[in-house]
Structures are given as structure tokens and as C-alpha cells.
Amino acid sequence: MKSLFIDTSTKTLTIAILENNKLLSNKTSETTNEHSKYALDLLKKAFDETLIKPNEIEKIFVINGPGSFTGVRIGVTIAKTYAWALEKKLVPISSLFAHALSYDGYDYYVSLLDARRGFVYAAIYDREYNFILKEQYISIVELNGAIEKLNGSIIIIGDISINYSESSPLVLDVPKIITHCKDYKTVPAHSLKPNYLKRVEAEEKLMAENK
Amino acid sequence: MKDTYILGIESSCDETSASIVKNGREEISTVIATQMDIHKVYGGVVPEIASRNHVENITMVIEETLSKANMKLEDIDAIGVTHGPGLIGSLLIGLQAAKTLSFLYDKPLIPVHHIAGHIYANRLVDEFNFPLIALVISGGHTDLIYMAGDYSFKKIGGTLDDAVGEAYDKVAKIMGLDYPGGPIIDELSKKGEDTYDLPIPLDDDSNNFSFSGIKSAVVNLVHNEKQRGNIIHKENLARSFQERVIHILTKKTMRALKENNISTLLLAGGVSANSALRERFTELCEKENINLLIPPLKYCTDNATMIATAAYYAYQKGITSDLLLNAKATISLEKEGIE
Image 1 (tube, rainbow over the protein chains, first blue to last red):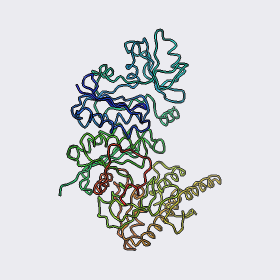
Image 2 (image 1 turned 45 degrees about the vertical axis):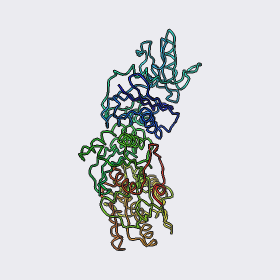
Image 3 (image 1 turned 180 degrees about the vertical axis):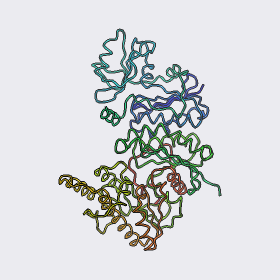
Image 4 (image 1 turned 90 degrees about the vertical axis):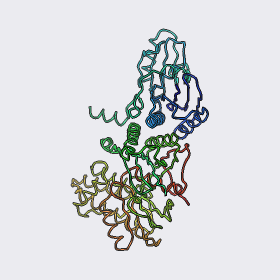
């Protein structure tokens, strides 16, 4: 099975083409705030390198958040347009889960992304990648409280440090992610949307006023 | 000659739209998913909410456009997309969809300036006789554009502060009217008399406009009347405001036509839907023997039909982009065109 992997949710842009769990092309680019400009160019370069045609792809795996709202929308728009136009299967994957999957050998995986102002998007998984803490928008204080309750070896993966130790950097083991997620539920292209984990501030304000 | 079908995509503000236009003048199909009701409760467009709706709508809008035209992506000759100016997060959605389709189907990608789109909306109903002057009036623009030929834009005047549509919306807000305020002021003014003493905005020899002064004048007037316990006569205030605005827009535009010895004027942008403005320009142009082009109401608001139309003329002039095309919140129209 040939598949395409797209992630634009963090500052590193990643596009990969795989045959089963073998990487045929893995392109990354540190184009902070410029994913919009470079994503399609990188996609084209990935295809050029493999000699595979876009129509030969069977499944598209896309990180649909959480992360930078604008960043996530870029990957989601590309993936859903591609899947709709060429009638491909589409599988959304959580950024937090993808980052956790890319490490192994721990009892607990704390995966987080900076959501600013003392908050993060975070999830905690156990050794078998079951949720200990469901994905959510959570204060760093509260997350640290949840971490303190864990007994065993812990790795904290993220783009900011939340206590005294540095977080392990974000990496993507794309073959491992694809292998793990290959039988995940597919979604129709039209209904794919980002998983922001957070409402728009104007919505929150309006809801508070209407209470 | 072979027909050229262009797929246009527009997502610069709060409408997700796609359209197919044949040979730059025949609308084949258009779909517009508007978010107006979503933003109404906030009294204006909330950029992040707009972006979130665009990403949900985009593929459905394109699919429906194709199915209404009974066409497939393979039948399209090129893809035109608004890459600015506009809300950056919104623009990115249309742009990514357009770039993806351009890559997958190996179709030329044509970047279109949103205002070029508004100008070329007129091409769907009439020929352009060059040279001409375009008065672009919207929530973001108040520009006098000189066009020597197709896809050539030279700015000869513009607003120094607020755009005319922006002034309309702000004045409507002060008066406690709903969003968007322009059409409401237009409607109210029909029932009112010009009784309020408001200044004429920037009445000088230049081709420039300024609408922040008249906006402040309305703010002060409403404030003072409230303090005195007087009731504002909304119909009359709407009428007085609109009279001043139309007076200066028509005066400077007609003078620019005369000075440059030009006999074609076209109106473009959301404010060109204003009924009093359309009437006044129609009267004046008839009197001065000017050929006036006004876009049909359905092309005054944001739509992809105008983008697909403008894209055709840009394409004729050899304007295309590679996949590195990016969206920008502000772009100069002059630099988008040909010399």
C-alpha cells in the first residue's frame, strides 16, 4: 500500500511518501509561519523523488491537530482537497499521539504542545498507548498535577518545558506512525476538519455573556 | 478557437466561493457559502471563525461548482485564486486548495488580486473600452484606478484613512444598526431628509479621499445629542451621511474622468451595490456622456465568478505562479498587473 503523510501542525513541515512501512521519501522543512508557501512545493518534490504518481497513493494520513490553528488548517486543506479530488482514503491522526508514538520504552508518555499563556494541548498515554489523560487544553499547573500521580518511567515530549526538566523534542517516526494507524477509521474528505481542542476566544466570550 | 474554462476560488473574508467561467465572460456555475449569519452576532467578521468555516466548506463548495457545471476537474484549463488582500487565515484555505488541485491535475495556477476580481466582475456584463477609470469602493478600499488596457492598473487616487465601506459600517455601529451597516444606511436614507450638518470629506483638488473625519463628526453628533437628551433621527442622519459621501465620491470621480479625458467609468466593490450611489452615477454619466459600467448586484459582494473572470485576463497576459505562491494580507494592485 502506497501512502502519503502530511504534517503542518508544528514548526517543522513534514511530507512523506511510503510503500507499506518503508519510507520512499521523507521531506522536512523548518519553515515557521511559511508552511503555506512551501507545503505544496515540498509535496511535489517528494513525488518527484519517488517517481510515484499522485494517483497511485491509496491512503492519506494527515495530522489534524492540535497545534497552530493556521498550521493545522494548511495540512488539513491539502489532505482533504487531495482525497476528495482523487477519491483517496483519508486518515486523521492526532499530533500528540504521533509524537508519543515516535518514542518507546516508557511506562507513560506525556505529549504536549504550547498553547500559550500557561496552557498546553496535552495527553498522557500508558505503555500500550491507552489514554491516561484524554487530549485536552489544560493549564500547565493542572498537567503537572496529573504527572505527579504517575508511577513508573515517564517521558515528557513537547515544544516547551513544563517543569524543571527539558521536554524531549518533537520527532516523527513516520513508518511507526503509519504502521500503527494503518487500519484507523477513514473519514470522508468533506467532513475532515481540524481538532483544535479550543474554541475561538470570541465564541467563549459570547457564551460567557449569554450564561 | 478553443474555449478556456477557468476555475476560480475565493476565500478572502467570510465567503467560501468557487466558480467556473468560460472565456472570461460567461459564468458557467458559481457556489457561494456565506458565513454572514455566523458573524452577525459578533458585530463583524471574526477572522479565526471565518478560517474555521472555510476549511470545513472548501471541498464541498468546489464539488458543487463542478457538478452544477456538469464538468470534471480534467475539463478545467486553469485555476485562479485570490491570494490577497484579505484575512490571511481565510486566504490560506482557498490558496492551499487551489495549489493542491493545480499540482494534482498539472493545471496553470493564476494568482488574482481581490480588487482585480471586483473590477473584472463588470466584464461579465460588458466590454471594456480602454482607457477607463475604475472606482473601487468596498470595506477595505476606496481607489481610483486608471486602466490603459487589460490587466494594467495605475492608482491615481485613494483614501488616506478609512475605506468608504468601513466608514459606513462604523457609522452604522454608532447609530446602533446591525452589521453589515452599509445596506441598512442606504435603506434608511431613502426615508430621510438631509437635515444634519456634517462636513464634506476632503473637498480639495486631489483625487484622494478621507472618511475618518465624517465618521468622527457622526460620533460627536450622536454623543452630543444623547447628552442633551435629544433623539437621533436615524433616517435623516443616514441621509445626511450618505449625501456627503456620495457627493465627494461622484465629484472627484467625474473630475478625474474629465481631467484625463476618459469616457468609460466602472464601479467595483461591495459599496457599488449602494442604490443611491448607483442612481447618482447613472444620472451624472448620462449627462456627461460617459459610458458607465456597474456590476449586477450579485457580483458586488465577494464571489469566485469575478476571480475566475479576472484570472482569464491575467492568464492572457502570461501571469501564472509556481507552487510557492503565498497569500498576503496586503498586496499592491499596481504591481499585480502588467506595466
